[in-house]
Image 1 (tube, rainbow, N blue to C red):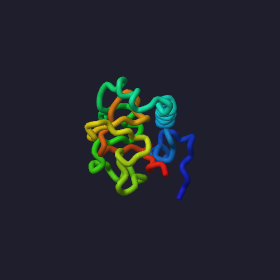
Image 2: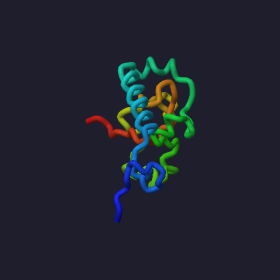
Image 3: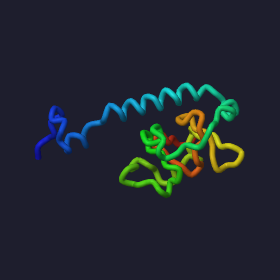
Image 4: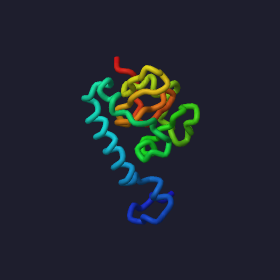
Amino acid sequence: MNQPNPEQAGSDETVTHLISRRYILSLAIAAGAAGSMASIPAEAQDAQVASTVSGDDPLAVALGYVPDVSQANPKVTPARQPGAKCTNCSWYAPKADTRTGLCNYFPGKLVESNGWCRMWAGPKK
């Protein structure tokens, strides 16, 4: 079987083997946002919260965020561990209503407690 040639940018086989610059850029932006929000306590972030993250938000799309983990497509999110969701992620800070909370990767917005994204990290020990 022939290996794809990266210089043949038009072939479908090549596109599936290369990581797009747009994807890497969106992850870099998400990492920068998380780094800047990590130093702000969750209580201070409460005042800055505007709305709940929607599934079509550009950052949500880049991070593979789904508001309901039961709707996650296993073919699109193969790295998702069983039981992984926002409520048991170390980046998540629940709000009083427990249905939503704050996430360092989505500054100024709320995420659903039953959601999931590629940045999920198990609870710190």
